[in-house]
View 1 (cartoon, one colour):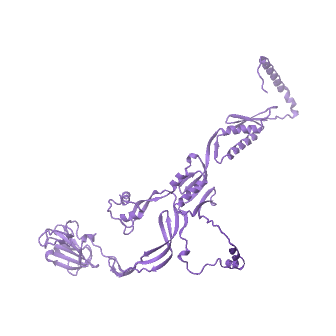
View 2: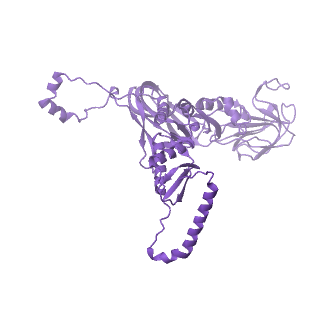
View 3: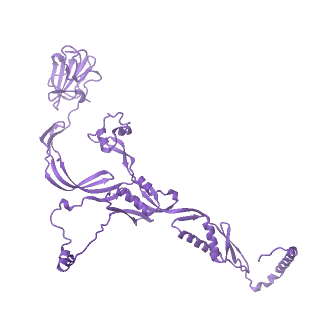
Length: 531
């Protein structure tokens, strides 16, 4: 009960103090003598409750206040699918009163709800995270997650035959979904006539049940196979995880589809194979030649730089975040070539070949299962083929022995006349130069370009002193305008062995070495064959 101050307040205050003092003295002197009365202190029986500093009412015990707060939290949580966060601090203080009553719990709960609802800190949206390896995108609903994955396969499923299903991953401890791609069920309306009912009854029905699982005898024809898309799957590991995030972290579905399925440049490596040129590589990887060169300037100083088998070139490969592997069954007719049949001859050099039979193209009908990764073909399996005209293979006999190598016959020297047409440098000289001239001082050491047998050694009119060497691969090298010959006809020499000294003999304009190479009786440019 609350008391109000009147004009008699001073007199009342004095009386209250006087009465309290008398009662205290009485307790000090007389209460111990009443210990046998078994007096029990009752303790706190009313609890005042505040939430975030605001009074919400009184309860009979702390457990009641705690229960009411839990109920309020549960009610607010059930009103939305989102995750609500609020800073809530409840304080409970107890007092002992003889006559004061506690508040109605319903009123206290309503007061708690009002305070808690007014101090919501943030609301976390229930959403779905699509995880593709290390790439993640946050979407608003499970339907959007499914639509994103469906958009990825729809690029290749132009007829809309397949669908992406999200299923529980039973191998995972948490709530994680994985993907399954299946063919959509075909809905067909079946109309049963009276004749069909009659035919499917009795002995007819029994006969059909006996033979319905029996495979027809005979080989399948092309018409027995289903053409078109056969299967799809994702190349990467795809997971869908339920989460609670701020709405600012969610990605609109159209933006997510664009990010996931668009092609992006990913660094890659191309290994050079036999016969490759920059032009051919550019066609293979669908990247402009100058761009490939730009990415490989360290290894290829110029566009004309020589490529080596096994050399690795840096390229960029266009790939989306989510790749799709798919298979398509196709029918086509084509001309084809049979594989070349080789006959190895161990007594021939690898430079020697002989064609025993020319090839002839064949013609065939083909049913193939073609595998793709996104837009790139990764494999082709011939399921069935029918030969209309069989191809005739080319038959080639080839040598297996490694041919000899050739080296420059001198050290240094300056080219003064190249192979081919020229103006005669002096009277009596040829206008078609059958070799190459290197200007060098007289007496310079001349070595055998390759091992072989000396077939000529001595004077040769306009050539002055010369040496001719026949090599095991049938080629011949010739060294002219020498000052001194150091070998004899019939002598066997090794590659790099000294055979003569350079000079200025015969029809010559100065000290130099004239070097020729002959193949099958024809002079060729020797520079193309020496290392």
